[in-house]
Length: 472
Ligand code: GLU
Image 1 (cartoon, rainbow, N blue to C red):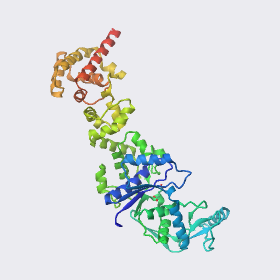
Image 2: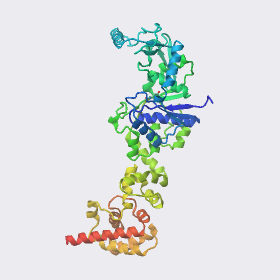
Image 3: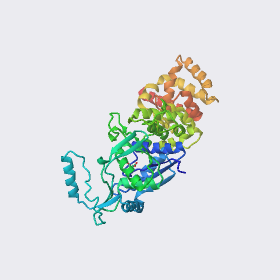
């Protein structure tokens, strides 16, 4: 089926998957999913000095975390040298390429001369018509058209005409026999039936060369869409200076992959004013028409706010799965189940990341609460001892743990001591959690259950008594 969209993501494995790369991957993936097409993953590892296995693994791990699945691949360019060779031979045989034996010194001289006369440094075509045979040290050059223009019809940028006199006979095979980037990419895209290429506009200058190769090979030129780069808040190209660049660093900081996906897609694509998207909505709505021509600006605060929103929107069950590793990093072994889901229900609206959520959840899983010093000295004081004891006794007697049952009990005890009901909230909070910020008292009581609440209150009573004794 020719009409099926086939997109690709071809990372060079010389580091981690960075935010810009992830956005490119997402655009290609979404476009394939939106159109019911296919998405191909290809590892561009021809530069053996810079490519590593660790980097390949890191990139695949990041894609998986983002939920970007591929229908084909990963293919590895390093395993396809014979395919490139065959295409280079084809270009040589059809007269669209030739061997060049110009020395480095000669090329440097030509370059210098061009610069001095104010021209663009380019190959002067010295070997173009010589009909040379292969010899040690020879490169293969593409015989590029000398006149006319090469037109790039870009889905985002419109038509861009490149004057062929500005381009030159670029190298397609190095002297060591390896193909160059432009050749390998075109051969791969042809043989993998790629018909839609969405990539960063840093590649725009390669596109006319690639189009010339397609034409020389008699192959159909794919559809191109060059996406503006992602910028940092200071409007320079996004880099480490602007914060973490690697996708998995965001995973480790407690970001939800759905928020990451949502945010990255919005860096360049829009759908009216809508900011929050589920994955299904993105698949349904993503198109190339609404990819903007101006660069997206990465704003970590916005990403964080969106993350909080995705956490609020997710089910407790789904959140539990993501939260468990963060809890276990704190030494808390929690299992999926009603207790954990109930815990999450009380904290999901107040956690912007899973790191914060694990921090907020920790008190639910301890045997004995550790008090923050300030909190304890301010709220666990002798004046509250008697009411706390009475409330504890009353709790031991009651069946229901709902607010309707508990509030009148608390009220009665506090009235009897001539204290306002509100006066018990902070001491209770410190007793149950060790801190002065927490979910609502009644929510926590319900989730912790009677035994844990009574035990924590008794601990607090003991703390006040011992504290009181030592100071009296
Ligand atoms: N491997 C190239 C890169 O990582 C991508 C080339 C392309 O999209 O054509 O920038």
